[in-house]
Length: 73
Image 1 (cartoon, rainbow, N blue to C red):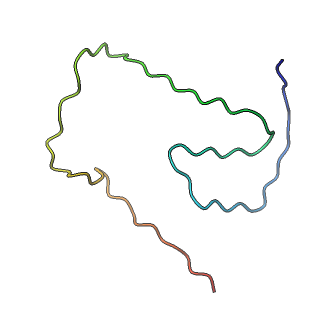
Image 2 (cartoon, rainbow, N blue to C red):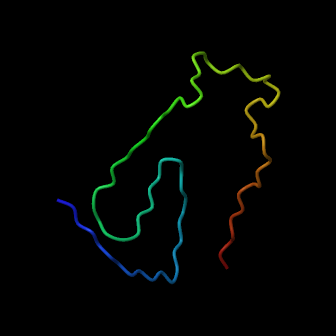
């Protein structure tokens, strides 16, 4: 049985401490969140990808700004 819900939500302030790759932020109706992942080989590749040159040594390819924590007064 499927339920279709129409909601109107007004959020005046929301503070999120942290979100990671597998986090879920749900605002609205409670229910079941069914995780789903689809992996497709659209290029028709049959071999593993080539190794990187190793010059990045684990550092991100794009420079990222360090996290800044606002101090409470």
